Structures are given as structure tokens and as C-alpha cells.
Image 1 (cartoon, one colour):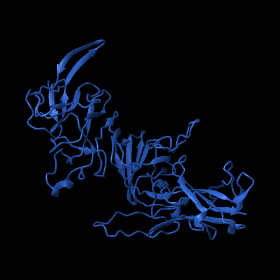
Image 2 (image 1 turned 180 degrees about the vertical axis):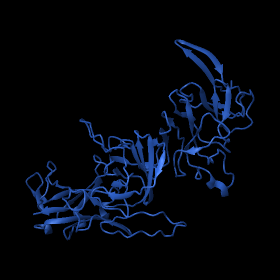
Image 3 (image 1 turned 180 degrees about the horizontal axis):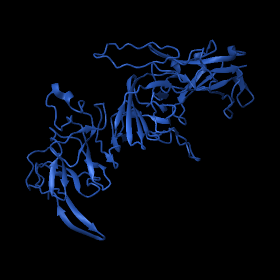
Image 4 (image 1 turned 135 degrees about the horizontal axis):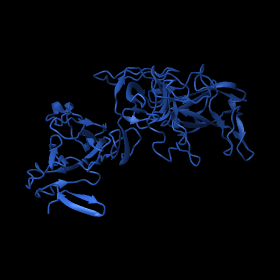
Amino acid sequence: NNAEIFTATVTGGTVGPFFQVTRTLNGLGNTNVLSPGRRMSRNGAFIAFESRATDPKSNAAPAGTILGTWVYTIMGDTFNEVGTRTPSTDIGRFPTFTDYDGSLNPSSLVFSSFFNFRPNGTFPDTAATVNEGLNPDFSAEIFLTQVPVSSSNTFTRLTNVTLFTSVGGTRAITSQTRKRIAFSLGGAELGGSNPDFSVELYYLITPIITNQSAAVLSFFTGASNMPVAAATPVPSPSPSPTPTPSPVPGAPVGLAPGELSIVRSTVALAQSDAEFTCVSVIENCVAEDLRTPALPVELNGVSVSVNGAAAGLKFVGNTSKQINFVMPIGFPPGLGTVAVNVLDTGANTDTLLRGLVQIVFAQPDIFTTSMDAGGRAIAFNITNPLTRLPEPFNVTSDDGTGTQVPTKIELSVTGMRFAAVSEVDITVGTTAIPDANILSIQPNRQMPGFEIIIFTLPASLAGAGDVPIQVSFVRGSTSAVSRPAATAPHITIN
């Protein structure tokens, strides 16, 4: 009565004959594990399972308690163990086939593990050699290896979970190829914002790259096109404390989580121009409170990732050689590695470009009608909750009851998603808006990459006329500013 694996042939309404695949005896617990899910390849040729046995058809009890991963070939009634057996108990591996050809023959097997596989499937045996492996921090990861299985198999890590606190299995649900895999994971922040480290569902994109480009990537803020200072690799060893670059007005140090951003290069960044357009007439199809991710993570064959986290895409450009994207919201400050992947179906190529950008707490940038230097700030008078009035603005307005109150301004910005009201300063012309007048700052969940600052105009601005508006951010010793007055967007105050 040991758990065994069987196959059966189904023809019309007839089931059978049945065939016993494994032939083992019970050791300390069931010898064989056939995890729930699709463990048979689509062509019916292979079965992936786990077993404590060293020979799953020897009709013998296992010598140990550690599970090995096996692939069974039905036609030849043969078993092949995948790599070296782990030195101790692993998480659930859920081995699954993928990379199918037109005849539904798989060429790859994916599985989960928190062990530190070397590329050849063995394990470093001492602390001094731990960095030789693919998973030196022993986090839950998804790996890929070849089918049919042989002693020369190589192993590739597909995920990059860098937190040791990752918990539970990473059961991979594969598509036809390794390019798209779904999995669940808890205890990890993978860039999409999981502050409570709960178990979440993830979508893994692994482009099949044919060539890498040496073209340089340059970054800009997405609201007014400020060029971001070029980032450099962190020196080794890292200095302590790490120096923080001083902000230069009009030349930001970096980009902030959730910021609308632009990346440009000297080569085309898409096979043709494409802009994501919401086509729903019933609901806002990019609303953060309705779906995650709110924006597509693939657009016209293009994807962008920062430190492995997919960025939401608004536009990909061939002629303009640029991509408009939203920086993933789940990252702390530090150096970000950006990967841009460009699929060209006509040429049957998949090109990878890499670059570096600093991720900062905040980098304010005001949306402007020019989407560049100058222009009119995207701002509205919302004193009356039932109306949104464009400029020019008076310092007082009707609040909808006939009462004149200080005018309440809604200003659209980016790069301030996690800023607190106490960390925000606003300057209109040469007048600093009093702290008490800054009422709120919050994400615009109907427009990814946008934040809304609401403030009231002080009476001292009466008659200011056409004046620039600036936003700054201060947190401890870190500060950042929007465009300087000379190139800042303007508003008009009567």
C-alpha cells in the first residue's frame, strides 16, 4: 500500500489498460510524490515526480528520506534523476514541463527549490564556495533544466528572489514556453509593492534573448523631460556611509518608485511605435484599484524591468527611440539595473539592452502642457467639489455654498508617491506656500505614474500674475527639486 504512480490509456469512453510506473516499498513515509497539477508532458511521453527511492522500479524501500526529482519516459519505461539529490529536505518542487515544439515535445523542466544549485546541478559544500552556486542566499527560486534528462544537464535560475525571508513553495504554472510562468510566493518584495510580505501571485516573463546591444540607455523624468544624471556601478568595497549625491535643479540624481519615466537610446526600442490606449467604455482599464498590474508589462513585444521587477508601459517607440514607463513601486533607494527587451517578430530577434539608474526616495516633477521645459502646469481650482476650473486662479473662490474661501489647487506631479505632506514644499513665483496650506499628497490611482498635491493659495499671492511653480522634497539629509524657476511650468494668479 505504498503510494505508486500509474498511467492509463483513455480511448473514447474506455479507460485502460493501466500500467504501474513506480515499484517501490514504503520507507519512513510514502516513497513517491506526484504533486497535484500537470506532471505529464502534453504529448504524454514524460512524467515528472519526486521519489525517495534510488531506483523507482526496484521494488525496494528507500535508503534515505530525501526526495529526488525524476523524469519517467513512458515509451522506454526508464527513469532519470534530475541533478544531484539535495543534501536535506527541500520545499515542494512541483516539477513541470515547458518549451514545447509543434509536436508537443517538451525540451525543458522547471522546478522550485531553495537550494544553491551550481549550473551543473551539484551543490557547494562549504561556506567558502557558496558563491559558486545560483542561489547563495537560499531563497525560494524557480530553476530550469533540459529534457530529456542526462548526466550533462545544466541548470538555470529563472527567478531572482533576494530576500531570505521568502516562505512557502513557488509552484510554477508554465505556458508553452519558459517565457511566461505564473507562481505564488510569500515573504518577499519583488518590486510590485508587498509591504506585508503576504503570499501573492506573480507573473514571470523570461524573454528568450538572441543578442545583446551595447547601446547606452539614458533616463528622463516623465512629466517634464528632465535628464537624469548618469548612474555608475557601486564601487567594491562600498564606502561607509555611502555618499548621497547633491541634487542639481533640472538635473535629477535619479527616479523615484512609481514615477512616470522615460528611457531613450541611440537605437530603436520597438519594432514599431505603440501606445497603450484604454479601450473600455465601461471602466478605467488602467485603474490601480481595479487591477494589478494597472499597465501592460509587455507592449508590442517590448518589456522593461528594474532590478528584475516589470515596469508598466505607456509607450514604446521605434522612430523616437524611447519608452515611457512607470518605475516599479516596491524598491528602496539604491542603484537600479534596467533591462529593456525588444522583440522583433519580423526579424525573429529578441534584443536585450541594459543600463543603470539611481532609485531615490522622491524626485518631484510637475506635469506641464509642453511635457518639457516651460508650458502651463497641469493644475485646477477644485474649491467647489462639483467643478474643476482651469487657470487663471483667484486667491479666493466660491466653495459651492456662495462662501468665498482660499482657493484650493489640485496640482498633478510625479515622483512623489511615498512622500508625506510634511516632506513637501511648494513655491509659487517667489512665495513659499505655508506648510499649513499643503493639505494632501496622494497617488492618482486612476492614472498610474501620477500623484496629486492639493494646497490652498495664500492671500499674499493676489495679483502675482504669470509665475513659475516648483515642488521640492526633503527627508532628513535627502532632498530633491522639480525644474528650476527658469524652466519651470507656470500658472496665472489674478
